[in-house]
Amino acid sequence: MSFRRIINHSPNYRNRTQPIRYIIIHCSKFSPEKQIEILNEYKLSTHYIISQTGRVTENCPPERVAYHSGESHWLQSPEKSLNETSIGIELEAPHLGQTTEDYPRSLRSALTRVLKELSKVYNIRPENVLGHSDIAPTRKIDPGCGFPWYKLYRNGYGVWPDFKQTSPKGSEEELLQTIGYDTSDLTAARYAFCRHFLPEEVLINNDLQELLDNPYPKDFTVQNQEKYQLYLRATAKAYETARKKRYWYMEE
Ligand SMILES: [Zn+2]
Figure 1: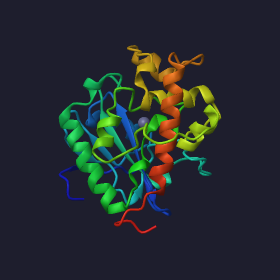
Figure 2: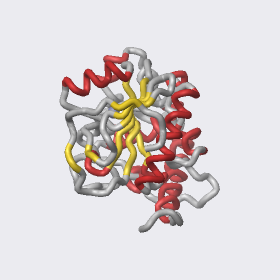
Figure 3: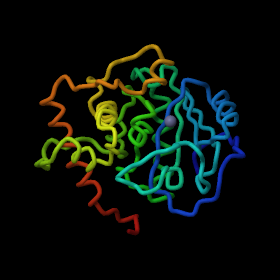
Figure 4: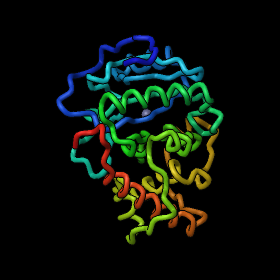
């Protein structure tokens, strides 16, 4: 890796047997040092940790599998977890990403540098940059509704709804599945979608412990149904289009 980083490698990893396809974005309210302490305590690990000031720590080299996602699914993946096929990036976010202030410019530029290098080295498709709550909607809240997904998209990573294209027909569940969400808990998938694409629908919870204990409101319903349907269809279309795209630097 050519970006500047502090090396603090975890003893918790295994060797990869599958190619890397995804980058998973996480957040934690703790400093990188404290995060490493906690990861070690639970025998977990991640690949990179980025501090509020943009300092990057490497906790596991990307060539190895780190334990950052737990049980997780995307696009009806048959495996129990995306760990085998992903790189994990933890961001230091004092309010667990509940506010955009959690992601200052210094952190964002470091993240872009890291994403740029990893995507190039491992041929990771832009649509495969996801949040932890996208792949584990019943359990996880990170990186939170304050995470700047649109800014990231403008920098070339992730996907944003394409309102110019004809949106596909389908039920709410089918559209969420087209995007990639595991809909075995439809309310959780709906909430995870809003966290990522329609944060104005998300209820801000300043009790961080309560938020971690209850990652989504069990009785969640969308306020602006019309806008939600529009966003849902435009996002499904955008993912379909993104997946068809060929990149000259990627062998398929
Ligand atoms: Zn996470």
